[in-house]
Image 1 (cartoon, rainbow, N blue to C red):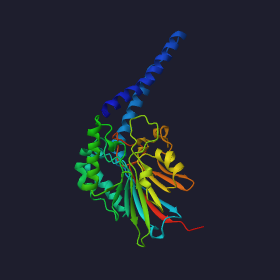
Image 2 (tube, rainbow, N blue to C red):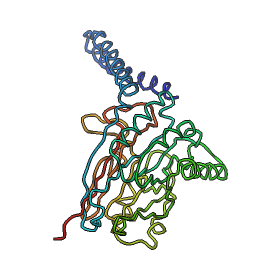
Image 3 (cartoon, helix red, strand yellow):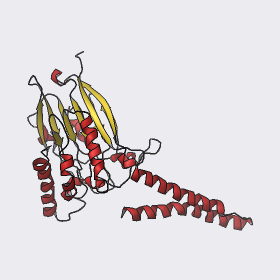
Image 4 (cartoon, one colour):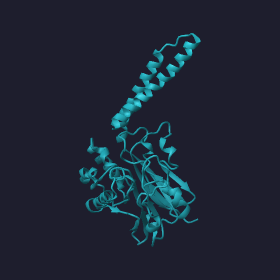
Length: 329
């Protein structure tokens, strides 16, 4: 399907110079002059060749160029025992990405482990259409090393809305994926709930996790199942939220809560960036990286996997967030 779409797009790009030539040719005919075709033909050929070269780069090189982004996050409410606490944030595995190169996922896991994280936070979209994608990668995923394990949430694709038409079948598939994360991989999946990580002095940080919560007018189907209020019940102290869709942050987190740090993914930054511009910016206000609003911060990870098998200008990302206790003023 993706190959067919690329062929169609290539033909459309090739048509553009021809349409311009035809219009110019008609004008020249009326004016009684002649317009050579060859320059337009060479331009069409050049555009198509460049298009396929870019796609080839994205497929064979760009989607495997994993890079780590390292940031420090300081806040006055972070307990002293958590100063230097290392969180590795990953998102959007879309495990079918690796079907032609399973060893690449192992390389990504090695990059995660290289940071010796205290905790790994995964912000959703383990799969694209179903649990069957994950089964071949169980042994590789189990190699993630973290002192406090892996916390995860479900993204829009994890709710199987692109595969199952019948609600009952879809809900069962979601439960199967949830069971896979919890029982097979041993991850702590947070479905509108929270988990506490304790420090050496019994101080704590609370991690909130919600099902996919959508607040953007996207051009494709999505789903809203998040319940932040439920996840926050009974919590206090310093809190970190895991939510798949970054639109959740500006729509609900900032105006209605005092949660200091939110982690999300989902955008992939459209898997393409041209001189710093990405098509994802046409849909999302928060596309990639760090965003601050007063005392609240969002980090959007652009993901490790792909929905379309290429990345151009947007490398797969592992984010290392080191917590720092901000001295009281």
